[in-house]
Image (cartoon, rainbow, N blue to C red; front, side, top):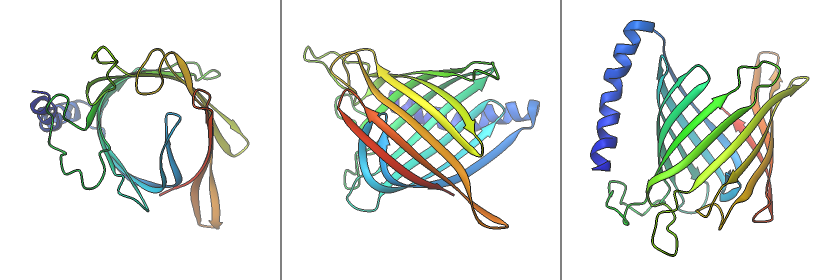
Length: 234
C-alpha cells in the first residue's frame, strides 16, 4: 500500500503543480552537485569522498527533489526523493531514503520488515526575525526499515535540529545542534548526536569565474567522534 501511495504522489504532483502554476506562474528547476571529502549525515559517518548530485522542481510552494550520493570507492549508493510544501516560514516534507547500495537490486521491494527504504516526515520552521534567523526542524521515521526496539516495536527514530545562519565578512556560516529524544537509529536514548559549524564562500578563480566552496567541522558527542569535511558545489 505504501508503494502505491508513494508512486501516486509522484504522478499526481505535476497535476497539483500545474494548478498552482496557473495561479502563481512561479516555476523553477534546479540541478547541481557537491563533491565532498567525506559524507557525514546527522553526526554519523556514511562514506569516504563522494559525488552528490541533486535536481529539483518547484512550483509555488510545492517541490519535488531527488538527491544522491556515490563514493569514489566501494559499493555504497544512496538515492532519496523528497516531496514538500513551504509557506510562511513553515515547511513540511516526506522523504524516501534508500541507501542499500549497489548490488542490492531491491529498490522496488516495499514489503514490511523486508524493504530497504526509510520513510521520514519532517516539519520545519524559520523564525521571521531578521536579526535572529533561527530555524527548527523535527524529523521522524514513520515507515520502512526503521530501527526496532527489543520488544519488537518501531522506534520512530527522530532527529531534532536547530540551525542559526550568520556572516563574517564574505563568509556565510551556519551553526547546528542536532539531538534525538529517545531510543532509535541515532542513539540508545536521549542524546546530542551532532554539533557542527559550516562555512561557505565563493572562491574567485579568475576575474569572471568563482567556485562555491565549503567546509564543515562536526562532532557527535554521543559517539565521541569528530569530522572535518571539505566540499565543492557545482
